[in-house]
Image (cartoon, rainbow, N blue to C red):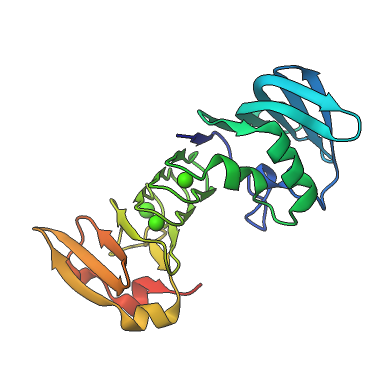
Length: 239
Ligand SMILES: [Ca+2]
Ligand SMILES: [Ca+2]
Ligand SMILES: [Ca+2]
């Protein structure tokens, strides 16, 4: 189970920044094998990602070619800790191959977050991806963007109007603290395909919850929300 923790806002204006920039082969970075247990990646704007692990081996042609990565810590140019990912184990060689092959930002995250993870936001607006598996995502203050992905996920946005991204096949998710009433800066929203919204049914679940069922095994349970508080075209749309 990976644990991802954000200490400071790592997103830039595009919303997808430094946790991913290292893993995008279009972005220049350098890396140094400090020891058999430590590798440091440095981006062109001097952010660093420290990978800790075991038995790292390096080959001049193949690059990082052996060992396991067990934690990743991200720092800004001033050395402030921005985020950490711990409690996982991925092959350094597989990870390194992904760096060469992928044109996406998500090689590391696909590998590290494929199981059951816990993602915890900072008190600024964070963008978090949980990938596959039955994950737990915990937002903080600010506008958080939660991409919970496949699996039965348990989600909390925390204070502030948060954005929950939901796609076909994402499974039976639960939002523990959805604010459907809103008020300035507090309204939470679900981004979901407009066709899915049109086909959705809304019903009461248990004593005080609301189930929005998209069919095909896809649903969101809104804990502590009454059915009358969910206007599907107001709380849920594709954005
Ligand atoms: Ca996951
Ligand atoms: Ca899910
Ligand atoms: Ca919220």
